[in-house]
Amino acid sequence: MTYLGLDAVFVAVAAMVVLVGTVPRRSAPRAERTGVRGATARRSRANGRALTNRRWWLATAVTGAALMVLTAVFDTVMIRADLFRYDASALIGLRIGLTPVEDLAWPLVAAVLLPALWELLGRSPRPGTSGAAVRAGAEAPGDPETHARPEAPERAEVPARPDAPTRPLETP
Amino acid sequence: MIRALPGTVGVSGLYLGALVVSLASMVAMDRRWRLFLWADSRRGAIVLLAGIVVFLSWDAAAIRLGFFERGHGQALVGVEIAPHLPLEELFFVTFLSYLTMVGHALVRRLLDRREAARPAGPEAEHGAHSEVLR
Image 1 (tube, rainbow over the protein chains, first blue to last red):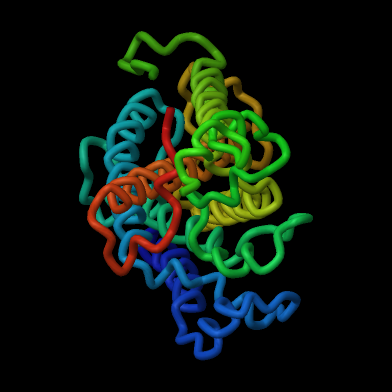
Image 2 (image 1 turned 180 degrees about the vertical axis):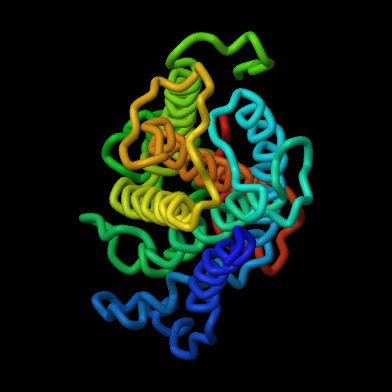
């Protein structure tokens, strides 16, 4: 086996995790709409929903590209500093700077596998969030529920309250 | 970060120090904008642990197969957690996983903001626009 062959194993693992997240989920939309709680199977189907979302893939592509550039740059620096060495006979021999192209599988797997896993896990159950957590499960991490936590009371300071001065304007 | 040209990397622990500073920067960004562990600590911890396990396994396999071997750069502290696996690698795979998740969350948040700023479309159903990097 070569280093590229070993890479293929880990790329395949990442691809499988993504596939698990993108298999058709027939009953998921209904479970989301009705906010059914406790149906673990239904929820887990809903959790991977972001993996079929164009923006999720765009974010993954941008992250992966940035990580690959960083890998090529810093691997070159680290190899030059003799932090690690490669057995040249296990490499195909193509390098970017000093970075063997095989090393680029690391940022690829990182950018695909870890965010996919994050989506598949779904939001952790939290007291006070019932159907809403299930409904929005696949839209983390930038969704409002994330910030509706007790630790973030400062976010509630500005928004208009029922007794705020804006109220009279709304009454006829 | 570090400039590791020959002759300028004579300080033991330079690599480890750079990794610790980089990792601390990720934690600071996470905490500031609630991107990863500060967005969902349980989920984040599982993902982070999974990343560490996957990448250390990758290292272990590559070392066992003879693809990788330890370097002898002076920037290493010289401690190995397994044959040919320097202590620094544990910090590196942790940093790589953390950087990935912070980066992905940041990019996604920016994309969500951009989407929310556009006229309402099929994807603009969510209140992600309330998510602002301040």
